Length: 263
Length: 263
Image 1 (cartoon, each protein chain N blue to C red):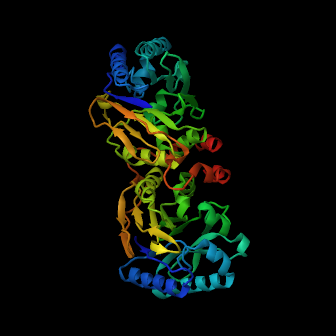
Image 2 (image 1 turned 180 degrees about the horizontal axis):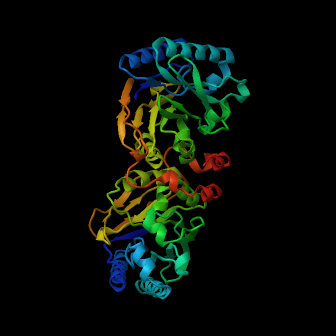
Image 3 (image 1 turned 180 degrees about the vertical axis):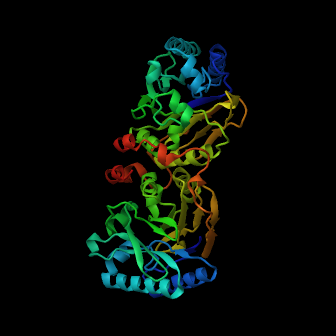
């Protein structure tokens, strides 16, 4: 399977412009033969939690989702996008949707691990584990940004059978250790691949790190971007039970009966 | 605090010879100002599970432990060593003891995550979480080898307050991804330091990787050895709540109330 990751700089609340960038990325990804495009966290509105909370209503979110479904359908490519949840502002979370190439939303997820005081003030945390669905012979899971830094969240996806984890993110502040240290470990300790699509450059008072990356199930980097806007297109190796290195089988060997009492 | 890690090749069931190497390492570590020496998994008997099961009785284990306590006392250095548990062969596990510089055993641990068919046939798994105790102003935890590859096991130590995790190991088969990928992530995702002391070279039909390493709480390598025998002496940076990088506080932010139902 060939997948693509969009990395770009959104402009706060310039929804039409931001959706236009996603449309461009979808067209380009399809042209390069990708079957699936992952876009960054909250890209349509920009990563500006307080402004979204104050100024973006449910109608605007619904309109953005309709537009994104149209992009998937018109460009003929499956997509992962991230939006504010469509609920009333007080219960609204940060969500990710996976849609197929007909624009049908196959599954949705609400970010469980909210990051920092601004995000926690603006959004409600999810309470459900990451969804995992079968698509074109592969088991796909969804997480959002800070979620993936917690081994428990990725384990929850792996236990549900995830082979490829799709992760819209908004990582700022020169946190090189997330793509550099944590993501390879998450992949390796679960024997899954992971696609992490970030914003880059200055946006809403932050400077985003870029460094979008695809990591294979042995923890190897299959492709990555730098600090500039770009589209990362990666062919996934066939992922099988033997993809994990050595003879360790962490999912089978783990003593979950004990672990769950010790967390 | 200055700590030392012993890396060497044991000879199967040549207990006197192997204990002599530990004594040498203790003397050398003390001479170089270390306050604590970590030695590899099952070093006194060699990493030979089936032979230990068949040929090593409780009396020999007790004698080895008495000798190790004497080494700590005589050399004046705290030590972590690993022995078969002293129980009847059928309940015997792989254990680690932490002793102070007077040779008093402060705490013990039985390996929970046994590795591979030979180890599982020869030993019984532990059922208790890693112990964490205060020593010279630092909270020390114990794990053994394969345990540390499971994020849940290191989390269990971190939740119990561990700031420095002491890990006797026996890693063979060119598993460079364990020290290279997993250990830095374990440290970073819990904000703790980690000392991992391995065998090296050919021993009992395996070739051990060496690469003993000390990793700091930001996932940085504070010192490491290659494939040859050696003593690694490392000064730990002061470990505080601020040692973890960025503003992420994984222990505080993690949704353990949810995670424990999803494992």
